[in-house]
Image 1 (cartoon, rainbow, N blue to C red):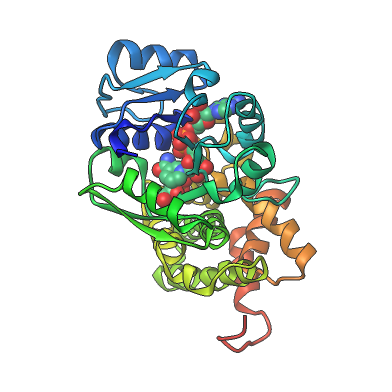
Image 2 (cartoon, rainbow, N blue to C red):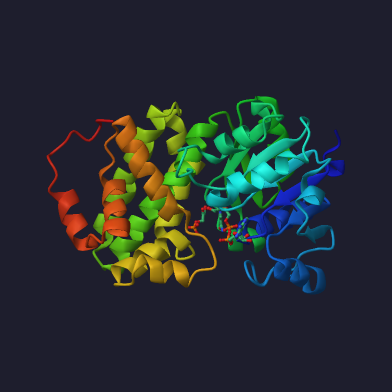
Length: 339
Ligand SMILES: NC(=O)C1=CN([C@@H]2O[C@H](COP(=O)(O)OP(=O)(O)OC[C@H]3O[C@@H](n4cnc5c(N)ncnc54)[C@H](O)[C@@H]3O)[C@@H](O)[C@H]2O)C=CC1
Ligand SMILES: O=C(CO)COP(=O)(O)O
């Protein structure tokens, strides 16, 4: 199939869905963009801008905003889903009625469902039984939406169990400012993308306390070990965690001031309550819900994740972040390479 004639739908007009729609339009595709809020659809139609979630990017006429999910996904060759992880099941269940087995599905959402502990391709696989599993892929890596919309050079991974399909998706998204590596370890890519958000909350707490640069580097490094530990238990490839969706995204989110998860951690350390912080945010900080999923999953699987465990108790039990640093520092002494 000649790429540019592919019919594409993007589901989710938050900052990341809008930035990826912009990228695809720049790559020469015409596409439908499903947005949840009528206000956002109307703004894009009249001003060619998503002022709520991605102010500043001018969206070309080749992006058609719609609140009609059927219009966005039916008859498409490729559907990119970019809704917050806690809305994935509802949205995908509604999509199922309009989709046939030929469509390639790409998830760009990062999270682990609270109830089922499924990653986003797992949820999509359950909700879209007509789509062969090899056609469900994931795009992830160090990529703030605002920088992608500003055409800042960005490098990500696209993972799928079917190498051919991953290559097609790679070709659709790749551009001179958006380099895409193919990867065949979707579960590793998704565990990396979901768990780095928890560690970013921890790094934000560390920065909010002004605890120092040494502890932040330690959190990033030991956080990577925790990502790998849970990932391996779930069947991931170890090398994925050294890649873009692992350490790459971990570094970006733990050190980048644009991160919503890092910001949540900073505000907690500065004394705000989680409810207060979330009430003030229209955007999503996936790490909050993922912390709950990972806490429960790690206990179920018997995997020790000390940093994630502390983040859980700070967010949901009111533990003091400074006390958590002390608890992490005074744990039994270990061998660094133990997984
Ligand atoms: N923003 C970024 O830089 C990046 C975000 N992501 C991931 O992309 C996913 C989507 O996040 P963003 O685009 O950042 O969203 P956002 O935080 O900018 O906006 C929130 C989104 O939730 C939608 N929403 C609210 N209620 C909804 C409902 N009931 N059903 C469906 N959608 C609803 C809003 O329409 C909006 O699109 C997340 O999993 C995030 O981790 C991944 C990489 C980069
Ligand atoms: O996933 C992201 C960058 O790769 C975005 O991180 P935040 O959701 O913390 O802003």
